[in-house]
Image (tube, rainbow, N blue to C red; front, side, top):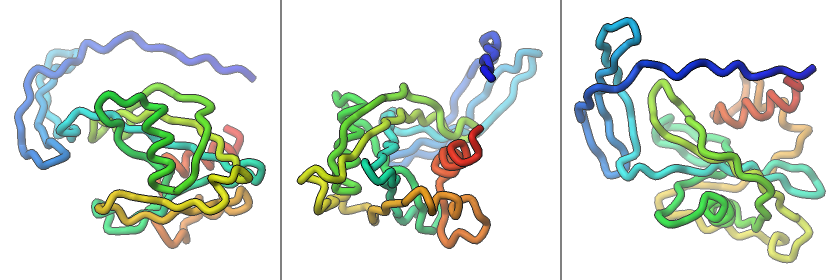
Length: 196
């Protein structure tokens, strides 16, 4: 069954004013005033990256096994270990695909081949303006560079590479998962397993 995407007309809503509430090295917290199409002026709190950098997330699949190559890392915002796709910021002057392969190598030690790059999309639009590209990458696990992968994460990161066989994917959708699972990863797994 083919479903068509219903495209809505552009909104008349627009931000009319920004007020800084806080600024850190990496993030800005702002209160924005925006105009509702019916005329009222409303406020909302939003987070933006201080340097307006986009990010890239890597869906890395090892071949021939089909394992997902993920990262398990401590995230201070949740005060927990989180299982997620490798990801990182795109450096100034860097292409998104380049950033994806660089981040994959840094965080997991694996070398990959970029198969497809999906343009930047919003991540948590209720809170943040962050936009992330999705890089779909194949990792040839028989390639000599991938026989003994050595990650080299940033000193400020606490990351470990995890290979997840498809037989273990359903466990990430259960309540008893012992670690936090990123919603993007859970959504991908649910989409594949539930064939939605």
